[in-house]
Image 1 (cartoon, helix red, strand yellow):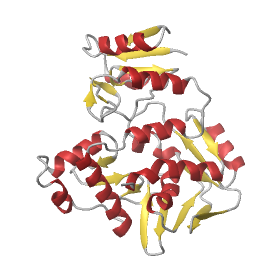
Image 2: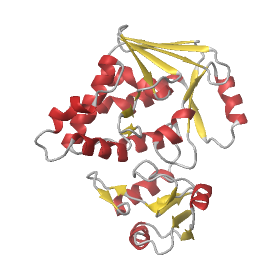
Image 3: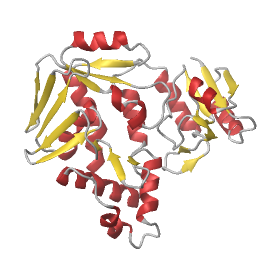
Image 4: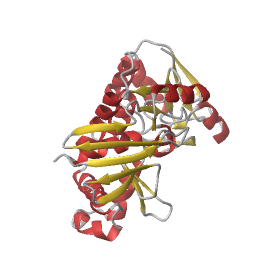
Length: 311
């Protein structure tokens, strides 16, 4: 296993990260100084310091920083912003990297770290998801004010915290652009809920997770990303039917990391069959990922999104 830490010169958070790594592993750790944004993008530094395990940033979604030479922050087990992962978090990341890859396991870990832990953040996050499910659109910030009232935090502050955790993404004007699994703008994955409300999902796996999250019937209308051939997935009373019958899903990610919307949502798609998915992956060698059969894709969608509206 190769461990490399990318950092800017004189990074104050480098020493704590190296010390915690020394506590949990005897493996050698190399350090690379990054001086500019171009080098950060080239080597995959999402803020300083960034730990790469065999070239992968397993904490890519945990902080608010994207590729660049800015200071990076992480979230600890309590959801608080910290300058470096804890020893337990590093130990878990190293253990996961040393295990055979389970389909979607890294994606699942990323999304789990984005789950709001603060009660106010969780309440507003769930209100956003319910608004999408009921109307197909995100709520206006003012409609969330009653939830944050009396908490000592404004709705804007809570939305910013959810954005930084990558539970939602805000547009430049501060409006809610998405709340995984939902998108406020059209995508290639349209989902009809209970034959009444149309919503758009960020990706194929997000679309599959909506039925499990809401415990409602859904119909996904999507297309093979390579051919444009239509693909539908209908879930009724917990039973799912795919058309065409041989359709599969692909999960992949940009190795540069960053928010899910930027790093992986474009690469989580449906294909009409495994051969079509294999042809696409062969023509996109820079996008690492896995082809999932229907059962594995449905299971991953449920694991990612069923907890979001849990009490």
